[in-house]
Length: 118
Length: 286
Image 1 (cartoon, chains in turn blue, green):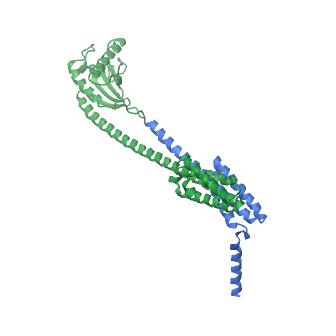
Image 2 (cartoon, one colour):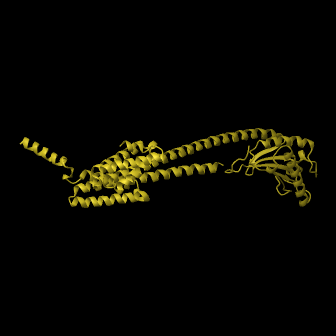
Image 3 (cartoon, one colour):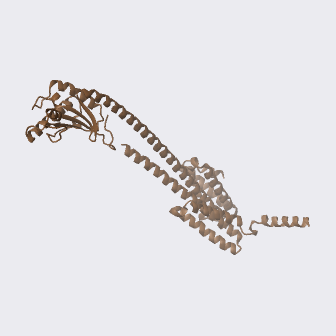
């Protein structure tokens, strides 16, 4: 009995690892989803450049889901990679905009203080 | 791959020669022209490698480079397969991420510098304020001592108008005259010294008063002339002219009963009013 179970496990593992395209790309789906959520959380939707890439990421995700339901798992995995890359970029762009705004505000504060002290 | 790392070398000629070499090398392996994704990825990486990313986010730039290398490899192996194009797409995004990363670091540095400057300025301001306050306290103490010395020649009191020094008319002037007696000049010199110790923002008013004898008009004229004499002497003794003004109040503000000789003597007086410092207004000059 034990041997059978063992064999079954080995077979399943081989099937999964063997040709990456055997099952739906659940891992990549999770990665892309969480990258999109992270971008949303830093407010990517509120900065134009970031919002563009956030939209691209969502579109890719939607396409990937359609491909998964058509069992086109290999293509879906690739589209999900695009989704993740765009979401990561959206996050970076949003952070950049925020950092720049913070810097500008700090610089303005210094200038105002200087003007007051004159 | 060595061509990739050499792309950050300066010199347009070198760069274009390399690009050509890469293109030739690529075309020898893959017959199809590079995809739009790959062209964009190469351009984005070139921009990133020439940006501040090299210094500010070397790890992100490295990751962008590795992604581009993989995309180039995939292109050589499999031309413009979906997989090759996807890798180029990802590589382009990674190059843009490295540039954004550099932007974040640069902005953070700007923020930190400005924030430090702001806090240092606040610290300095606070130090200056403390010093100013200490100096003012010192002046007030000196003034207090100086005014005490005046108690022999006049009365000093604080009221809603500020510090008021009241000098007896008898000490200062002969009857019906506005010129100062010699002894008055000695005493007014002390007053002038004390006044110079006071905060310059405090205005000084010299107010002349008479008793009720004589006409109102004459009393007003005499009180003004006396106040003017005192003012002129104080200015001559060093009090800033624009700080100090004279006013003749005549018989309108008695402090004692005009029916007795003693009361009238008390009403004949000159008041030197050092007005309370105006709060909120900054101290000038000294």
